[in-house]
Length: 249
Length: 198
Image 1: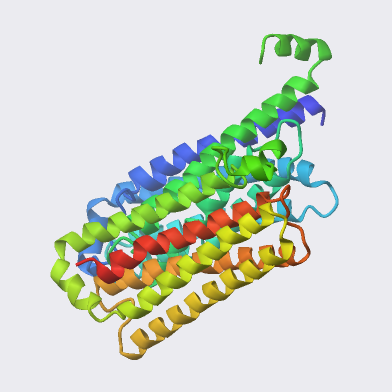
Image 2: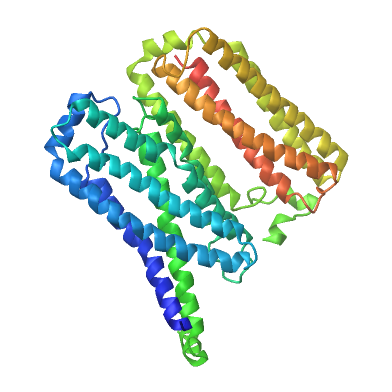
């Protein structure tokens, strides 16, 4: 594969980031009725009623999100490749960690949505089944965040060690990344609490950590796309890159 | 950046820059913002249930909370003095003062452990009521920050013992000190909010 094609694929992978972001918010968040999400304090009957009155949307939203969540994978791969260049080719442990973290994030998000699809699969099932499936889905996604935290910390550590003339991520983005990863910790409280801001529908365990995750994802995507574009410019003929440089691009 | 990070002793006190690594302040401000959200959530819930919150709050041991406040203030003073000592090239004193800050931080954690144990033994837990939900969540998350801060202090203590901090090399020390002051500042807000506000 020549350099030009390789970089084009990298650019497509990097653009999978914004694509994931938009489709995740649309299908998983808006269409599947997760903004706002069901409260853990709902009775089994009220929860079943919530499913039955939005059955089509919930099925469509989660089934589509199970496809589009995979946009996270190419994005993770291009980040791993960019990190590996900084880390060096021998034993790029942090790049591997980021890669595994991203892959597991896809599985965690997918598994939880599968439980909600299963709940919506048999509308005639008893209300307690809906509750059990909903609980399982939310506790999977809210308690298994550490693989995403490690993905983020690995990316930030590489960013901080980047001595390139134009680094992949600015240092402030790296510190913000670590903080965003840490902001997930209150979500562990969802394993115990059913009401209040630390329950799985609360501001401090749902809205803020998920916002932080997507905020990091958007910021990282911007810098990753910029990095591929820079490489595309320099890989072109010296004449072309000279013209672009003269134009200030 | 290097030039900014290694000021001379005379200029360090007079410049307007934030101490330590400038980019770490993004992290510190984000942490303060997060705790700000915790405090707003507490106040928001407290306003509607002042009586119930006060009833539960009366079962807290205020004197232990006060002891912990004093411990963190003393530790912050020790850390400030350590930075000053480093600027004056008194490296042995830096290690001694950091050791004192670590001792205060560890004492804070021991007092917290006693407090938690006493509550759990008397049948009070995170699920008892809304006040105790906030109490355990907020002080627990703060305790995680204390542990992170203690780890940083221990690393700085080991560095100081090897004489790595001097007038021209205070950046790392200032950065760690800023984080520890943030941990202290958060407790200074948490203590009146949880133990005193009625």
